[in-house]
Amino acid sequence: MSGGLARMIAVRIGLGALTLLLISGLIFGAMGLLPGDVAEAILGQNRTPETVAALRTQLGLDQPAWSRYLDWIGGMLTGDFGKSLASGRPVADLIGGRLVNTLSLAAYAALISVPLSIALGILAALYRGRLADRGISIGALTAISMPDFFVAYVMIFLFAVTWGLLPSLAAVTPDAGLGEWLYRATLPALALTLATSAHMLRMTRASIVNVLASPYVEMAKLKGLTPSRVVVRHALPNALAPIINVVAVNLAFLIVGVVVVETVFVYPGLGQLLVDSVAARDVPVVQAACLIFAAAYVSLNLLADILAILTNPRLRTAR
Image (cartoon, rainbow, N blue to C red; front, side, top):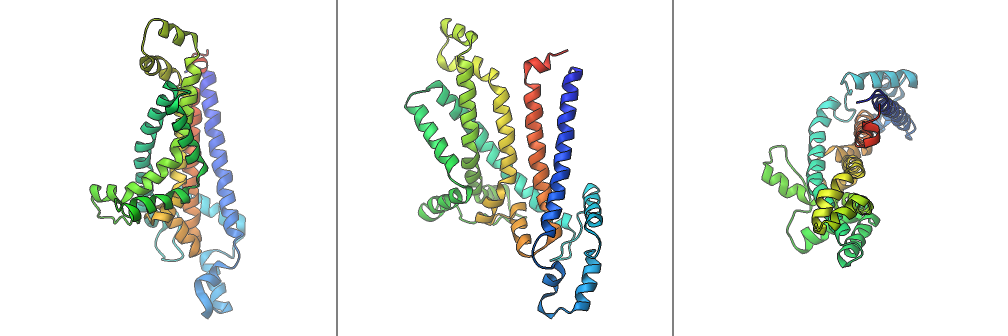
């Protein structure tokens, strides 16, 4: 790796860290802008000015905003997420199992969407301009146009209500086996797959079609190679850079975009915990969950950026 390439990657990492720091400030500031007083909301109608003042002191709400932000971000960096205002339990304990569930669901959806998108993209490029290409393109545009919650409800209507193949609620328990988990998580995973596959499919098709116009591909055709072999052996390896980039970006969306899908299917993940905590005004949980989602999104976008740099032959061989 050349020195210039290493510096470029270091700059990207630094920008990613700065972006995450700015996002943490926005999250903390947004929590402070919520209407009402957290202490009053916790104590309810039987509160008195004395009890409100005592609880505000206990929660540190009487401190300046900058001091509370530094305490919060310092605790996050050391793994101390604070305590839930609703249950009194450590936030880390509440988030731990939920985060595993969310990552498992995102991985399940990725295992379906990535191979499916690349295969359909190759098929569309191989038969570009024909019926198969047009059908795949129309399906991809339709999927892009539909919001996640609409896709989720349509799948519930078809697979759970009409055909009775899958459960409408993904209420997975901690002691559920792999088979039970797959059975209950399949419908939300399919909803995420439909929401993300279209972008990867279209990028795969566009990248391969662009490479197919190259002189070396034309030479491979003149040698008598079949179209499928030309695409798989010659076009696909040289179109991987943009495909890898869009796959990494969509993996970020899979993790962040689960909030809506988890809420619709009542899946016990971090997104569902975030929605419940917002309703309960559980500020420490909301802040921690939002920062984790932001960190996942920034990290995977940073990974996509670095992979795009590393797969660029001109940068990789630069001296």
